[in-house]
Image 1 (cartoon, one colour):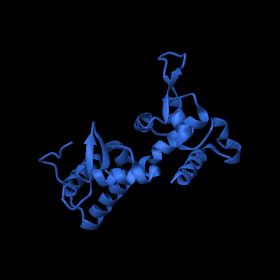
Image 2 (cartoon, helix red, strand yellow; image 1 turned 45 degrees about the vertical axis):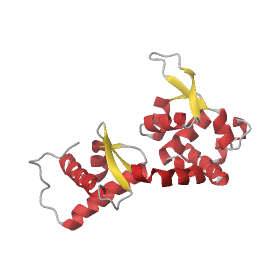
Image 3 (cartoon, helix red, strand yellow; image 1 turned 135 degrees about the vertical axis):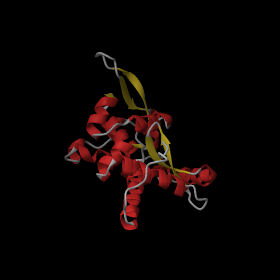
Image 4 (cartoon, rainbow, N blue to C red; image 1 turned 90 degrees about the vertical axis):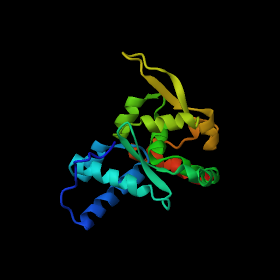
Length: 202
């Protein structure tokens, strides 16, 4: 998305401007998944044109050769990614530390699928409160989940479940070895167990 030539940021001191850019960077980093302009606007409680211009400025600033990351825009969604020239270093890191290869969104989705399978994407979205398309796709690519059928309702949505690779990665002989949800007291903490399992694998 490109900045309109005739569009300029209304008068704003550098402290406020830098504060908003810092917040945008933090949101993109913490998300781990692409965020739409509207999502950023909602979190920042600022006008959409202002946020759009600030992001465009940040995109240009990240092009500095000394920066290791950049902001990309795909179908109107923004995401922080590493620069291609650093791919060798990133691959070495991910091979050494498996936990870093999964975003928080992916861990949450995986935990929900592990305990609730078979489950549809819509049900996963409802539990998480946000869309899980990207997280599910990543989990499929890593062979941690798979399609296990379709729900017999209009539209026949896909049902997802974990794979044998999931069991291998988390050193489980079967799903019965997952701790009972009664131990957690609330489903919001489902992902905590998987994070602990990932730490044990390092």
